[in-house]
Image (cartoon, rainbow, N blue to C red; front, side):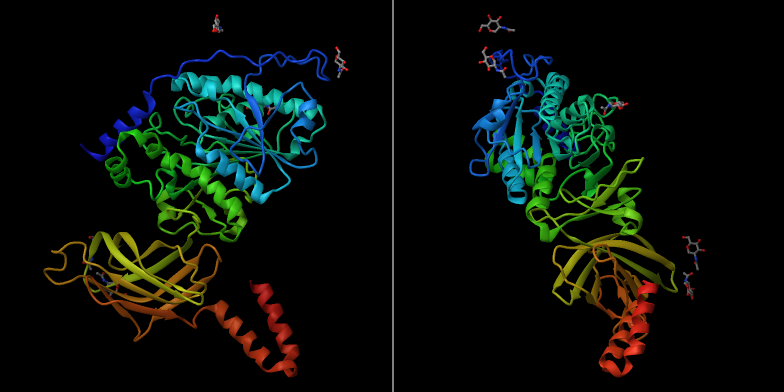
Length: 507
Ligand SMILES: *[C@@H]1O[C@H](CO)[C@@H](O)[C@H](O)[C@H]1NC(C)=O
Ligand SMILES: *[C@@H]1O[C@H](CO)[C@@H](O)[C@H](O)[C@H]1NC(C)=O
Ligand SMILES: *[C@@H]1O[C@H](CO)[C@@H](O)[C@H](O)[C@H]1NC(C)=O
Ligand SMILES: *[C@@H]1O[C@H](CO)[C@@H](O)[C@H](O)[C@H]1NC(C)=O
Ligand SMILES: *[C@@H]1O[C@H](CO)[C@@H](O)[C@H](O)[C@H]1NC(C)=O
């Protein structure tokens, strides 16, 4: 059975789950003389559970639209901001464990906020197409709730809605039905099936809030089979690791887990990449010191070549809670790499190198090992696959490090044999004069030259080439001059000020 078939099987099992019995309990009738007598809330079936930092997984108090007394009863902080969490399709009809983790993380970051979990479990635990259709009803409920809060003079500018999977589309539908726009909607891997080609009124879209940001983490396969929506649906759409599949969620891992735990755990396994969107957002809340950055790029392939690490004109942005609210007319697709676990941040580098030779050599899919040594630390033997290596061309590739090495001072590079036979008839080699390196996170650029001689030989299956930071770099030359001037002290103060001015103008 091929990888693709296994995947289809898994998706199949995931979607052909039997329906949970439909419960027909309705809300208790609402008081007739609340302040909002004009609006009929009797059809609001969704529940709005006000969570607390102390018991993030417990439903202790519900806000009931049309019942203003519940505001005080639930200790709703009218001065604080409000997060509304909307879950997605539920196989078991139960809250999933990510909910309380997200609740806790929100409180950790914003202790005075209100965190409300929208409970639409009954409507979410139907056959998938039915639940997908139910997003309309739940969206109406949420819109009524938001309008009710606004009627009580709670500013919608303080509302941030977070919707996962189908919940992202609930947020979108709600956002379109509210009297005014809420401040922000974050779509966490919005569901794909039934929505990929739906018009913007039926799904999440940039019109649905003042600002809409989206994480796409499981957009694998053809559009109708992709669990997460593939098209951009917000102002900022981030595709971590290309958006298709997340590290640590590989099929091998999945099969290993099945061998260990059996098919019983299938749902959790399939959801690994899908749910990663939530955990990336949690990471952005609690690991502020390890903020992940994403970079605007035309395609996943260009990103993987390291061609998109620019931050000019808002080309880069923070992933998650602290995103800069850049509203462009066209959605921007952004990319980044991550680790397989929290904290997810990695450091991105573009390495550009001209490879030359007398002999005409053209190779594909070559394995390289790159080691980075910097002022803060080192990261050795990062595996990189070169898509193509052709004589007398400049190649560009992306290297990521899960270690913050600081300013890079030395780089080592080794070309591994791709098979036993490669190099059997005389090893291939290229000459390299220097490396150009650009850091995405610091935007710093540097040039590295071979440690010995004018150029080095990168040989298939051969020795490691060592490159050291070059003085050639114009930026560092200016910095050096400034440093020199500072060393001379106040005697040259005049000159130093000029140098500083020059640096500012040139940077
Ligand atoms: C709800 O359940 C009761 C019995 O428990 C049944 O009589 C009634 O028809 C049901 N209503 C709906 C709308 O299914
Ligand atoms: C609602 O009606 C009850 C009695 O019917 C009354 O005691 C209460 O004050 C009313 N509340 C409001 C908000 O009008
Ligand atoms: C709802 O969506 C439509 C179509 O995208 C848009 O024209 C309208 O302004 C939206 N309404 C609100 C309140 O966002
Ligand atoms: C190298 O190969 C390319 C195509 O593979 C060819 O166009 C070019 O003329 C060759 N150059 C030399 C010097 O052999
Ligand atoms: C590559 O360029 C160098 C000059 O930079 C030249 O001497 C060499 O012949 C070229 N190799 C090929 C295969 O064209």
